[in-house]
Image 1: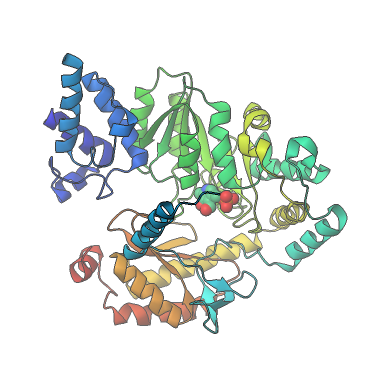
Image 2: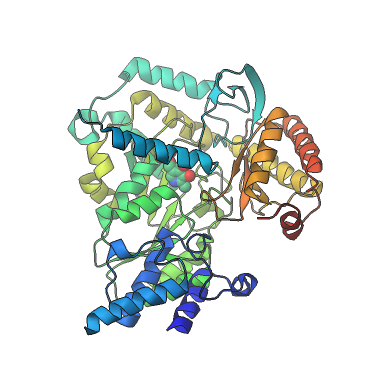
Length: 85
Length: 415
Ligand SMILES: Cc1ncc(COP(=O)(O)O)c(C=O)c1O
């Protein structure tokens, strides 16, 4: 899951050489660094919902929850767990 | 009345937080009409200082032009001060419709509807014509008023990387299942001064059956050979479905905005756009003055030609001096400094030299992209700009950044 989301972030938010330049990984801050802002975040949220068949309520799509790929993975897993339970 | 102490405290803490981040905005009081040279009181209480203004949107130098001022006087005398009504109750004079007709002719569209501002035009138009079966696909650097307008609309929101046509195409493919697709962009981007590639955007729009929306606030009146804006610049006049623009920059600089484009879209705005329905009509003096502006621009390209010459001089001078600027063709010329504090320090030193510019940094622009944005005007002249250039060189030399590229500046000052 981590790699899929990393790949999406790279495609959706960075230019080809940029990803390399900043050494994008699961701990790279996305929101606080300005790579993703609230305006462009919408497509990431929709991608996660579609890809993993979950619904992330707006009040959980916070800048903190979306700040790194690691925290996004956590968020998705939590929702998948809820759905399974 | 209930203004609890705890709430007051919370507000004060928030304000303090803004101050501590160093992003608290202070107004500077100008004691003269808007022009290339202005008298400024800054900080508040200080004596007046005559400075060269390089941060106004007064691109054509019409904000205080005698003919424009005289037209506003005539409007005041003949039609009064204000309308005390929204347009559709009793706020529409014949001159409002006349201005809409003249804007339509100027922009080469089917029809036009005036709004109190372009912020209002952008705030109202999307909701008026798009539904939850549609999608809005916006450049990531569009103006804040467009972002707000999109948020008020039920259509799906999507964005593409700034001016990245491959990414836009990907998004258009992805959204073929929607009833309508709307590509949304600024014509000239206000912080970078670069242009949206409208020729390519129109081509993609035709291929993927999408409408095109362009906010030409920083282009109307001067971009293109006869100043009709970015559609003229790219040779796609008549192919843009919605143009929004402002009367608050090149076109007189007072206030007012419009949606101009397809007949049905303008008609729907007149029925449904909330800022049109629920905010007061543009006052008669402004309408008269705007008509005069369009008359001036339709009879001569002298002012936009002078602006173009000033812009070329300024861009070339800064480059030769060794500054890093964002390349482009518009009179918005950002001098890249990358480091936020450096942008503030240089703006302050320039002010001491009699140059009024502002440093912009995150969150107004992306992090690590701090800059001083300079804006040219037809009201500037070459000797004035030559002097300003010397001041820039002195300050640039003081900070040792002349001749350094992006990497060099970042190595020296950090991000
Ligand atoms: C691109 C753009 N659109 C809209 C606006 C808002 O225009 P107005 O001042 O007419 O509300 C601005 C002004 O800052 C702008 O830069």
